[in-house]
Image (tube, rainbow, N blue to C red):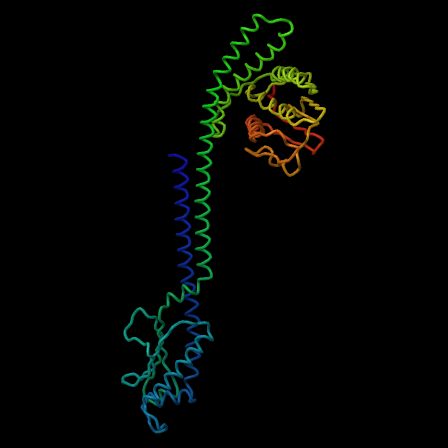
Length: 423
């Protein structure tokens, strides 16, 4: 299965898992809300039952309307019943609110085994979906009717009420879930976009290096022909041309493997190598080039040999890249110094220059791909921000580290530390 498919499967499973977990939390929340509601309705029933037990203005009005007694009022009994229903509704609503219940409800006050009743306009008979609570009243009203009197409360849309009670948890959870999905999709999209860019870049590098092989071959052939007619004056220059052309040829072959570095495959072929001769040869060649460009270059290598588990060509190329940078970003009187020492079973290769230096704010990003230091008059040499990233990658693949010390207008010191093979 491709990585893309694996990422999508993991993403889908994670989202489904979050939805299932959220659903279970919602069920638990609804159960807790129902338990709390039952507790609050129990308190309300107790209060209502207590206050409707005694003879007071409300129970007197309810008793008169419920028994159709027209002795005390000069108005029609329907008006009395409407007034009684209004005050009973206000009474019930107030007691429910006191116990934290704010939802639609209906009621019916009736005398058992009779047609006597008072009910709200929205009361519905025989509706099983509504939550129903019955209160058997005591005291004044049952005594007045000489029968059992019951107050029945029904609650409409009780599930919606429970969900409303949980909105403080549900809405943020949904928002966060949507945000997580959005961020993950954006990250995956960015990942695939970057992967396509890397693929395009690698294809471009591969095509370019193949195209460079022809001129390199031509330069090598021309150099060989010139060496047949060389003089003492041209001998040194022809050797430099041949050496650099051979190195360029090797680099072109190795650049074809760079695509594998981004894919983290085994692009480098490590062997146990005495690295000192390779480093010495690099220093000698760079010294000859520096003289031609009026750059002061000195090097001091440790007296002992050192064996590294490395691929010499890529490692030399990385060190050469650092030397080239020191030469490119040089001062008026450029000085470059390379030193190698063995310390704590590691090879330390330090390159120091007196160039323009690197600002503090740029030092933490200097090894990132495509990063370029801040623009300005100091940085007249333009590039693509690939060289130092390549150096960092090669050193890391060799299980080494790279340290940077730099001060603006004073120069830069870069130290590569590579593990030495124990003998």
